[in-house]
Amino acid sequence: MFKTAALPQDSMILQLVPIVTQACEILREEYRRYCAGDVFDVLEKEDHSPVTQADYRTNRYITRELAKISDLPLLSEEGEKDEREKWQKFWLLDPLDGTKEFLHKRPEFTINLSLVDGADTVFAVLAIPCEHCIYFCPEQGLPLKYNYQAEQWFAYCALDHASSVQIGLSQSSQNKPKYAEYLDVLSTLTEFSVFKAGSAYKFCMMLEDSVDIYPRFHPTCEWDTSAGQCLLERIGGGLIDFNGRPFTYNQRDTLLNGGFMAFKNQEMKDIAMQALALMQKRH
Image 1 (cartoon, rainbow, N blue to C red):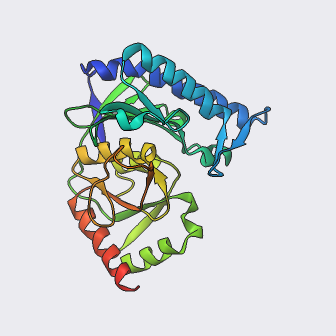
Image 2 (cartoon, rainbow, N blue to C red):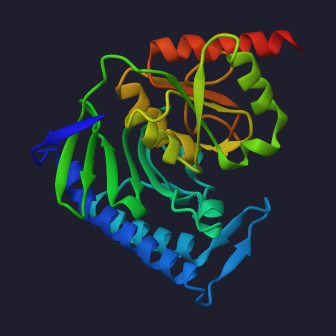
């Protein structure tokens, strides 16, 4: 959860606020046009995933504005990726995470921006345009939230205890048997409720105490998880592969991730991994 806070003094956050705010407004405008039935470009990428004019417009804007405040390279889902193996420190961007949600007229899409140093994410931004909210993970300290419509800052504050376990699932999980199997095993360990949403929105809801565990059995890419992992690790949670190892970034030939367990705290990690172990024993 978050409590009201004063304006932060972090220079990087203050430089990024107007850039991310305007990027959110660009996506809100594109979303409004799409929902209104205006002419709207939707293409298919090589991996058969959709990409839209909203992805490209937001990417162009953030790429241009980020270059004005930082000389670090940028690895974007919608940009060039050929030089990345040479980079020690760089920005990682998904200008529209949740394109399928966008196209299904669900306002659960996000902007994901993070700063990677070596193999680790050291600074992160997750924005939810349709909620006017931007989450920041500074290089030091707990996450912050900014509601740019109300011009109000909030600081993260952990709850003493949760009333029940809440599982976050992707909207597409209902068509994938592994999720049903995982929930079946989990039900032998604890009572839980299910929260379904697209994109990195689920990471934001973990910060808001609406999700405790987020299992993922189908693919993501590094720009889908970097910012969320950074935010979760800062509050005592995390994101790990099925062998218990935290994700690292820009260390492999592929940018595709394997499956993962994201969790809000150590107690939720123990439950998540115990259920995974029991599930694996079935096979």
